[in-house]
Amino acid sequence: MKGNVYFRRYWQLYALLVLPLAYFIVFKYGPMWGVQIAFKDFNFFQGITGSEWIGFDAFREVFRMDDFYRTLRNTIVLNLLDLLVSFPAPLILAILLYEMKVVWFKKLSQTILYIPHFISWVIIGGIVYQVFGTQSGMINNVLTALGFQAIPFLTDKNDWVLTYLLTGVWQSAGWGTILYLAALTGINRELFEAAEVDGAGRLKRIWYITIPGMKTTIATLLIINLGNMITIGFDRPYVIGNVAVRDYSDVLSTFVYRIGMESGQYTLATVVGLFQAVVGLIFVLGANYASKKLTDESIM
Image (cartoon, rainbow, N blue to C red):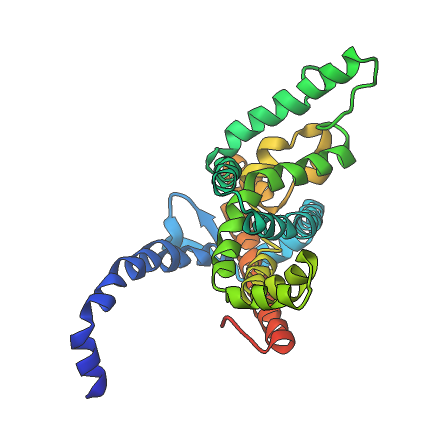
């Protein structure tokens, strides 16, 4: 009875959930019908329901492919390196922006840092080739003009990984500061004033007040990143990668594209996609459990 009274009083809040729920039902849960392709010898003309069931035969075929394990290794390694390099970047930027006292410079810096997030990866790929290209890149043109040897940013495997990581930081770090800045605004300013009176310097205030005040936000974003450890975006490795560095740039998303869209092996592509989803769920649950044990807080 009490629930009905609450619903009638605040029905507008429930009405606001209609569109988000419809989005998830149509675009998230609806496509799950196609997961059964992983267990069928999918024929485009017979459709999903008309195709023959083959059980786990497609899984066994995928797990026997050398390319699968190579792309799985690349996905995990690139995501781990991204976690080490890209995850702390927005946190550090947010702290620097928060500590700025000149308002106009702070707003200008935020705008400049946000812009790369809105640039398409296709455009970013063009910028990367114009700046880091071995033959015609701006940096190598300057180096060769000064008498130095050109650096193969996009053709040497190790240099390509470094270029890949730094490009990702440039594109995402500014936008990633938004959640951290929101968390920082929730910290009681009296804590900083009391610490300053007690003689704590800026670094100590950051270490003992600022960072602990963002503990929940950091844990939440870390869980989300760990959940995506087996999943990787298609755009960045596909646009920046090339044949010379395919051993490092070929990841699960590009592997799915090649066997699914280029080769027409939809069953195998679905198997890899389902594998990513299941392992990603395990990572999320495991990271959430670890976070609960370490911080006594959980997001699930």
